[in-house]
Length: 127
Image (cartoon, rainbow, N blue to C red; front, side, top):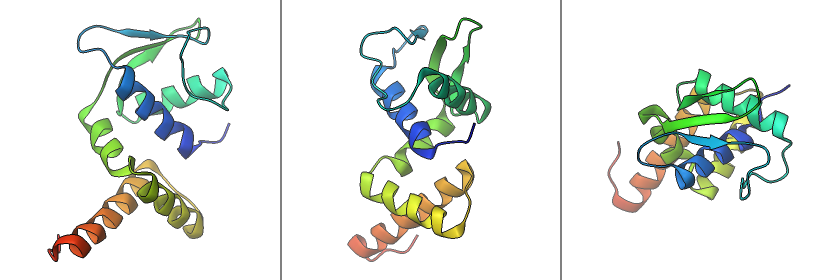
């Protein structure tokens, strides 16, 4: 299965919205309001595991196919902040596609660069 950057982003946005302050969120295929449309459950679970592997979420996938989600990590929140804006996300994806490849680190770096450009444009401050 190939990684899907849109699904990784959708997971983070979904988990941020549903996150509980204390405890574990049990997410299953049959759950009402799951909220990631246009993806089959197998793809969703695969990508949840990728986010766990990357250190963006703290949780685990059970043998029965549930995501037991504890929290988004600090690294996950940092990544989410730079890819949250739809326009920045669109430009980030476009740049990675033109480059011919991507990693989560590269996507974050691209988005941060685009945000730095926006900061300079709006404030005149180069960071």
